Amino acid sequence: MNVSRAIIDDLYPLYEAGEASAESRALIEQYLAEHPAEAATLRAAIELPLVEPPPDLEARSLKRTIWLLREGSTIGAAALALSYAPTAISYIERGKLHILYQDLPGISALTYLAAIALWAGFFFVCWRIRAAGLLPRRTWPARMVWVLIGTTIGLAACAPIQSWTGWTRTVNILPCLAFTVAILMGEWLGQIPKVNELTRPITIFTDPGDDGRD
Image 1 (cartoon, helix red, strand yellow):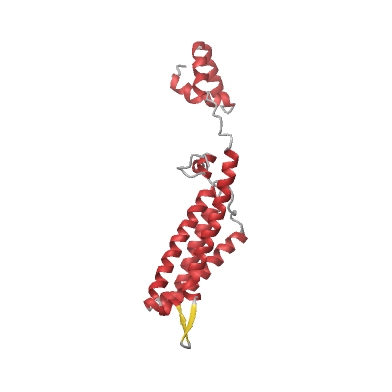
Image 2 (cartoon, one colour; image 1 turned 90 degrees about the horizontal axis):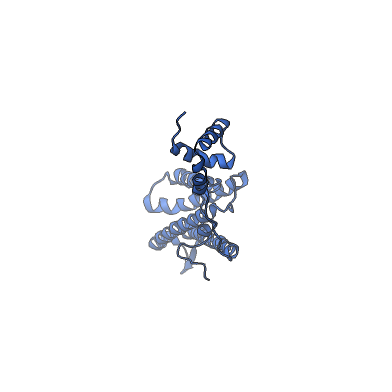
């Protein structure tokens, strides 16, 4: 049987790892018996150079992980607070009760935009640490937390949106929309990352521009 070197190159790593089938092993051994001079070149082709990790890799990874967890918690708390601020903030002026979204709609709209930006930052941080396996898995308690967060934010936004737009069906649609987005994001973040989504620890825990000298 005439077997090309390209086929042997593809099969030889599996052969060395002990994962090749019996037929593949027999094919490779027959080829090596017929071409003994190529055995050394095949072994050299799969040998990888030893890479010495930085001596402070573990400390840097731990430091970066702690920083990311704190950053995520801070951004998430700020995003949650701003999501409720337009309906929660009220003040009394000249004996009259004022609610932020009714009397200062412009500031309220900016507050919602800031909340959306913070939520985007929160999910970006979660994405950064997702590969480290430090986020809650897709359990029912975790799902309930996402459901409650999404639903309550949607309900809190109903009154301002309805007041500004006059859309009477806001209370029927907005909580469901926020609930759906929250549960989908929670499901995505709770997934175990696939192999092609993983990177080296130094790139998971370190900023692209961080040279690790600090």
